Amino acid sequence: METFFASIPILVLIVLMGVFKVAGDKSSIITLLITAFLAILAFHSPLPDTVNSFLYGMLKALVPILFIILMAIYSYNVLLQTKKIEVLKQQFSSISTDKSVQVLLITWGFGGLLEGMAGFGTAVAIPAAILISLGFRPVFSALVSLIANSVPTAFGAVGVPVIVLAQETGLPVIPLSTAVVLQLSVLMLLVPLVITFLADPRMKALPKNLLLSLLVGGVSLATQYLAARYIGAETPAIVGAIASIIVIVVIGKLTGKGGEKPIPMTYSGGEVFRAWAVYVLIMVLILFTSPLFPAVREMLSGVCSSTMSFMIGGEERKYTIQWLTQGGVLLFIGSFAGGLIQGGRVKDLLVLLWRSVVQLRKTIVTVICLVGFSSIMETSGMINQLAVALSAATGALYPLFAPTIGALGTFLTGSDTSANILFGKLQAGVAGHIGVDPNWLSAANTAGATGGKIISPQSIAIATSACDEQGKEGSILKAALPYALVYVVITGVVVYVFA
Image (cartoon, rainbow, N blue to C red; front, side, top):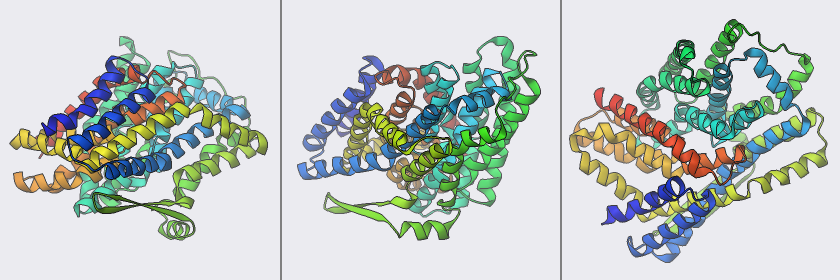
């Protein structure tokens, strides 16, 4: 019965959004109330613990998730305000008029780079918004951005998910990183193919899309493997994305589309630089405050920080925000300074920031409730109950289902990192009981979590906000669900076969 009760919030959320197409904010509020009710009555969680769990989750929702979502949308709105988006549109079109090339470059290449450096929704929000500006349909833009933001999340935000997994399990980072890349190897080839097919589904375009996908996916796989094997978790997503961008640009320049020449650039080098100023500044700031530069990060982390404590289940949980290395702050500085470089006025940029907050009002409610209910599920024991039940039910076939646990964690929390915190120790513990390499089975948690990211309600809320499609979360969930299921199944087969 506990397993049944623990599954109710997930089923309610899926049915409300996917079947009845209830808006994300309303679905999340209903799910939050049901989860709190079950935690108190079925899992005997004291009312103060349940309230503190929600407040703890709300704080995590506000910073970094909502803060980063807001600033990612703000960065795009700055481009609209200064009209520099027209320069970027022409530059993408000058590379190739082929839709497959454009979509793959923006979602897999540029989006992968954003994920590797920043994470937390930037790689969904910014590519989706750019695609819409290029004339692609909102639902399509949201879907391909969600699918593309799968594989890179394993090493998102400069490798945080795998680094946290290593800390939770006590396992070495490099073997874990290498195992994750190997488990995702098939998907590195398939995801680009899916993206190009969605962009251009004509059968006569299939050979071209297949070649493009194999080249881009192969380069991603090779560079990520080398980075994971010889450097660690910090750089695979970044170097893989950069290598992919180079390949896509070269192919785009060489092929064009059906003999049609790409649109020539009519803007000067200075105008192109100013158009990219926002994203260049963001990436520079994120890079120099990342673990790749520990001295800078340590110095800034100690300058300005805030800590809040919550008593949950007799345990004190502290949540610390290091403001000068916080992704949302870096995005704001890059966006604001870039807007000034692009010719924006201080007053106009501040007014635009408030308009961006108003634009996200429904998303703010949605994400707070989603992270709040996942926090209650975690602290009351619901999530652990589901994971233990799955491991007990599968027995020797557990490696086949290990990625599903990771996917469940990301579906609930919206974060690969959080999924590893929830289930990393469980995976390593089960590995010892069934005689499987703990590095391999623990890595399966992260690999599966990347699939759950596709249909995470938080990611979908980010996508709908970027596309100005609030209220259509159910439609996007329904469209993305088959891809996520196939993704997790493929990962499970790879993990099982080579366990």
